[in-house]
Length: 477
Image 1 (cartoon, one colour):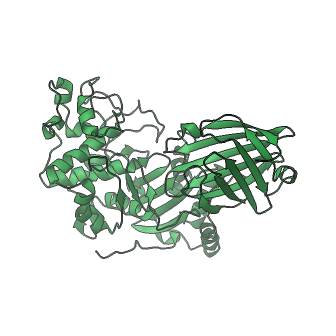
Image 2 (cartoon, helix red, strand yellow):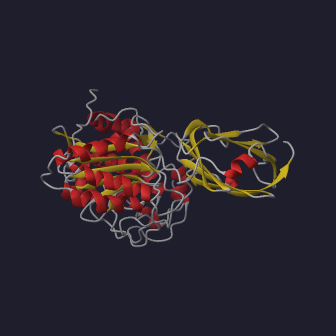
Image 3 (spheres, helix red, strand yellow):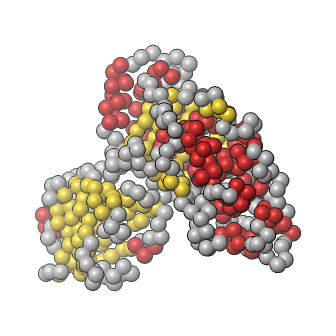
C-alpha cells in the first residue's frame, strides 16, 4: 500500500482566516474543554490540525461509536457486492441462534432497521454476553421494528455478525482492502467479542487523520483518487434522515435526525459521533470536514460544545477567497505547537503546601482498601502515595504542567498534572493515554485533616473509585 499524506496548506489558501482557528482554540480553552486533537479540512486539504500534549499525531485513539459509521460503510459495500440487501431479515442469518418460537416482531426485523436504530428493543441488550447476537435474538422485543428510535449498540454488533456470516471474514478484514488500504488508513485496531466478531458499535481505534480521511471520502460521495469505494448513492442514502430522533437520550445538534449509523447535523451537515467528543463532522455546503478526539465524559452533553464552537467560529469565516495574514498565521502556528491538555487555572505553590508536605493521613474505610496516604509538595512536583496492604501506589504530578508516568489505579501510561485552585485546595488531574479515562482528585486540606474527592470520567468501570475520603492526621504511615 502506498501511503499518501493529506495535503497541508495555509488556511487562507482554502478560504479560512487564521484568526478563526485561533478563536476556536481560545473558545475550547475558555470552555475548559478536554480536547485531545482536532483537524479541519477544506477542499480536501488540511487547513489546521492540533494535538494536545501528550497526545500525539500518530497515536491511535478510541473512537467509540464512530465505529458504527465504519460498520455502515461495510454494509454499504456488501450491498454493492450483492451479498446482502436492506430488506433481508436479520433472523435468517442465524438459524443456529434462533429461539424455539421467534416473536413476530423479531422475525420481521431487517438490516435497514438495525442501521437506522429502529429495532425491536428499547435499548441495547446484553453487551457483556459471550454471544451477543444470541442474547439479542432471545431478548423479548418491546415493539414492532421501524416504529421507535432507540440507540442500540448491540444491533450494530449484529450487523457485524451478519457480515461475518456472509463474507467469512471479520468486518475489519473485509474493509482492509475495500476501504482502509485505498484511503491510506494504516494499523487501525478493532476490538472483537469473545466469538471473534468485531465490536462494530464501539471498538475501533485510529488516528485523527484516519478519521479525516473517512470523512473526506463521504464528502467526495464515496470516491477516492478517482476510484469509487462506496456504491453510488450510498453516501446520500446512509447520511440522510431515516428516522426522527427527538427521543434520543443525548443532546447532539438539536436531535436533527438519524441516518444509517450517522447523526444529522445543522445546515445540511452530518456526523459520525463517539462518546466523549469523538467527531467526524462532514459539511457539504462548506466543502469541509472537521474531526476531533476528546474526553468530555465528566458531563453528559459537554461534547456538543465542540460542535457549537465549530459552527460559531470556523464555519462563518469560510469564504471563497481569503487574503494572506502572515502575522495571524504565525500566531496560529505558535498556538498549535504549544497545545497541551486542559488543566484548571491555578498556582504552582501555596502556603498550605509547606504545611502539609510530608504529612500522613489515615483514610476512612473505602472499597479499594487504601488505609492511609501522604502528600509531598515542591514548586515543581506533587507526589501522592496511597498505603494498601498489597503495596504503595503513587501519583507523581508536575505542578501546572503534565508528568508522564503510570496512574495509581491501573498502572497504565498516563499524564498527571496538579494546580492549587486556592490556598487550601489542590486539584490533581490524571488522564490515561491509551484508554478513554480520566480522574479528577480534589484535595482539601485544613487544620484537622484532609477531604479527598476522586471523580472518574471515562469508559472504564470505575464506580468503586468514585469516592470521598476523609483523612485524619497521623504521625507516620
